[in-house]
Amino acid sequence: MRETATELAELQALIDRSHARARPHMAGIIHLGKYSLTAAQVVRLFDGMKTIAVAAPAPNGDPLVAPMDGWFLHGKFFFSSSGDGVRINGLRKRARASIAYFDGERFLINAHGPVELMFKGHPEVDEIDAIFDRHYGSSAFDWSDEGVYVRLDADRFFTYSRTPQEFPS
Image (cartoon, rainbow, N blue to C red; front, side, top):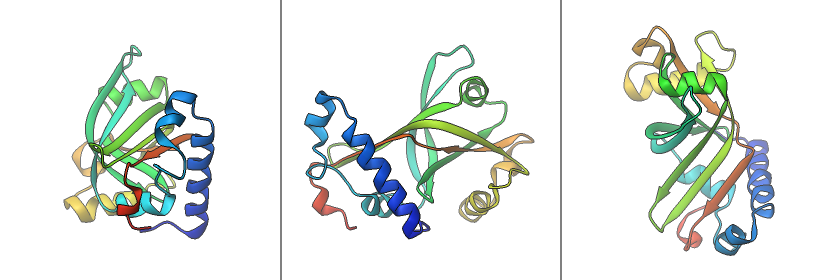
């Protein structure tokens, strides 16, 4: 867990705002506080590499979704790709994506928002690059001349679990 107390508070505020703005259908499913997870539960649940579903635009705007290795760091999602990847080319034109991480009926974490493409030399890339290097023995910059990390800066963040009490906070 690398989140500071401030980052946890910011994530909780984002979750609360997102759930408060949910339309009636979604609000009737997630019941903030009853079937939702807290920021602390999300951070513990998302410790280490997880396979996430990433939805991003193709260059022509078509939606594309694919499983990717994802990391949660400082209250934000990260994944990597090659700079010439279809999704990256689409994100250059429309820098928004959605991420879902779920386990059937046990839980769902769903985030949407703008993305930051973090190429070699980006001022904030060192920490996530070191995490990838420790986990894989190489980094996105080793895999491709145009390796890139993508950070999702969620402006909507939803959580759901029918049994939130089973997840430690």
